[in-house]
Image (spheres, helix red, strand yellow):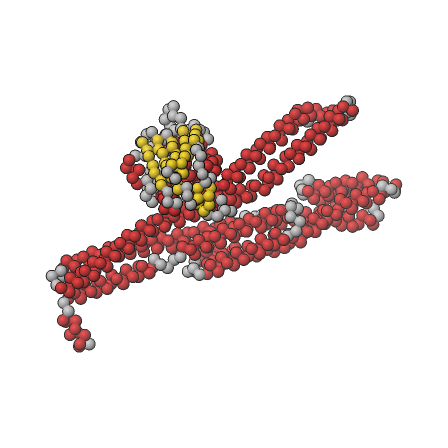
Length: 580
């Protein structure tokens, strides 16, 4: 201790204080930097994807139950597979959440979902058992009753009971279709009144099974269609997002503190340099510290710039991925039923013509039908029905054709089933984008409809990322529509949007021009900066043009430029190299 005191006494007090303060700042800087590295963005996106997968499996199970109940599915293989997938996804989510710090609300909601899932599994097993018996009895009963009635019609002694059997058969079938169409108690009374031979016992047992299980199965389907589990999954997703938002905010706070401490360190080092500049030792220290400060300042500046770019890219990439998946999912889900409807319209048309021809033959050979038939023909306006039937089918065919075009545009926009980079036709992307924005182009309370002019030239295929380029088209066209709507309040204003394409200097050029409000010179200089926007709060994020510029210039080595006159309009010009 005595030697230590002697050593300290030899040191000048200012140097000792400086060394202690520097050490404290460096330790604090190191600790703050470590705090910014503890949370993984990749883990967050993995958990979000797991939550979305659980939601999709939950919806698939509900759809499978309804399809099994309505006899669309004749076995329960799909329902069993979806239930197993849901349990596996729930276990994977629990594993992922266990790697995070304990969070009471999330753990409580996860336990609630697991409890409700176990209850639903028991209900599904009851549903499969009762629905199988119900479908078997529903299938067997009408055939058995028809056979029994045919046998009894040969024996005159059962003639009084045949009408009662027919009534029972009709009521049971009505109840099997919809338990609101007949009362089980009335049917049981009729069955009890029938005095029939033993051959009816088996059919009546099936009838009793239908009367017993139809209501129970319907009640089970209602319980399984309840949204309690779906609401719990949505609440878990919201709770997790709130938790991650808090974590991210804490991380951002540490980044701010890191920046403040770094600035304080730089200021203090500068102070030491100025105070100790007369000594040779401190000149050497000054040189080393200056280099370190410059490197740290540059690294911090680069990190902040990279953070902004990464944040913009992550946000836009998530939006593009979600939009692409949504577009592809909607297109896939709509395509099959629409194709089925469209393909059957022609067959329905043929059937309709045959029916109308048959009616014409009846009218030709039986010009004076029974009075009841004449009244019914007048009630349904048969002559008008024959004329309007074909028009109705033609309208249905035109409507399904329109939906098929929309589905095709959604598929072209998303391109999830294709490789990322390939040769594409830019005109298809422009047309798909216009179709998706058609509802904004149409007239509304905000103004008259926007006139779109296409001046397409002869463009070769361009080797590019089709999904990213389509997102650029959506962003630029959306901005043009906003500019036109902002100016639509002016009298005698005719909003016009023009798209021109041509080839120039080995580049495919796309020009999007509007006659909207225009952009000032000052704003044009900052228009591609991250988070810069001229739109009101809540209507723009300032990321669309930034990501568009990165997509065209950095990812595709092209050019994106803007030319605008305030009050007259704006032109955005995209230039993409034609060669791969």
